[in-house]
Image (cartoon, rainbow, N blue to C red):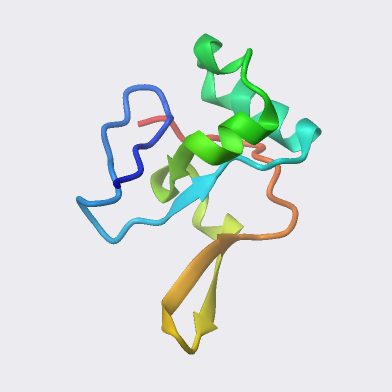
Length: 93
């Protein structure tokens, strides 16, 4: 099942490219920051667990310096957000 980007006006989905998609964090404070920076009122009433399970943001909305690549012996490189992944700036196309 494809992942769709939750950023406003973004139509990217995981089946269209090799673009990384990131789950909303479960940490309530970080999750709230993501919701605020998404500027989507419909996400404000969701719990961090709901957001983590059902919503993603594609890599186009993050500064490249926020993303690190790890190597996994079972699959290709995995892209993850760095440990201090509170979104300070969300790029909206």
